[in-house]
Length: 566
Ligand code: UDP
Image (cartoon, rainbow, N blue to C red; front, side, top):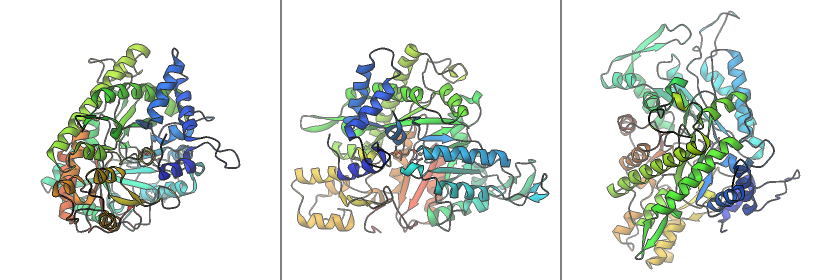
């Protein structure tokens, strides 16, 4: 097994089993064996064969499950899911019960999402004490501080998603709650948006803020003023994002189980209260083969790997140790999994298609349609073998086909597992051709030159000292006149790709993803507020479930750093 230095560093720091003195006691191969063994234990027949099949897809880096599965499978009380949603009701009891539960989940490597809209606004009455309420943002700050101190057993800091719906009286403060670039550092925040609100913005109508405690109108404002406040805050720091609750609920597979109010921290899984989901991602650069000297998508290998990994993810649900009985009950009744992808940008480069091209977007759609359809086939086959998910009778699939899982697909950010697999994040374009990853580990990782880029330049005989200097300095080859224009186009990086293409890729994948797509629309520093308004609006029109932007330089610490491209 060949691992990069950065992959080895991350595995050593966070994933490999350690003894009580902190000494690493397993190899990367042994890690994958431990995971494969644990999740094949629930197989009744051919257990060893399944163990080997699961081991192979992981050790070949064709697929990796989400980090908690890699970290915890086979360890005592191993919690294996990355994504959770917890309820927050308008009582101290609920607020602090959920805080405690979130701490336990964070300790195990999972992330939690909440919608705070049921909390009465700041300054509202508290009948029991005769005092006034602190409001949702104050309580979020307590969650944030708790997250800071629960360092997840030294593995990783917890992540939170905080949502406030756009009709909540505290919405303006919430929109600005991260604008100082200091507060709520352990939260992603998003505004819960309804179609009604978007139409009110379009028509420049009034918008009523409603007190959730007694459902009375707290204040009437202009929808467009709220929109403008959102846009300005997002322009300033990237927060808040939007989540489109009506779009999400139109796709809710089991509406009878209740409406969905929030997602997990990075937005790729809308979940019910107390529901969890485990994810896994196919490594697309391993899903190609050469034909007549050219790279082509290997559809057969992809199909086989999907069948194996949907089974693997379904096994994770059964092999999981649940920290909370409510989560066990919800999760095992719906059996949601999220199979997604990583390495999309590098696959496109191998196929010779620029990210900013119609061909790439069309292939994205075709690829994800294939992944979804084969995932459904796999889930259907599992249902015949093992039975449907218990809530199947109530689901949208009840009249259609038997399914083992209420959802099959999510596009996760793959922040850590793509480093282990040495490929590009999720469906993101390359951020730069040379970069340092910051914030993934305590110390910065080493300067990397993208390996797919290096190989291509080598093959074309274009790799010179001069080009290396240029790439190390700028992260880009757009100014390198020694490289033919067509090749330069193939290596356009995130900030060099107009936002239109980012959105088109997100839409292409969202169309065939039953959960959601986590994607950051990376923007140049000079991007205007009007453009951000346009991006957020287009996201809704495109039927995306959520939208996140990041304007270069608008936060003090970026995960990937290169020289300034602006
Ligand atoms: N997550 C988390 N803490 C982190 C990173 C991720 O809790 O530091 C959770 C969160 O729910 C996120 C999900 O894991 O949405 C998937 O993130 P990603 O794909 O980046 O995780 P990986 O499996 O690569 O570690």
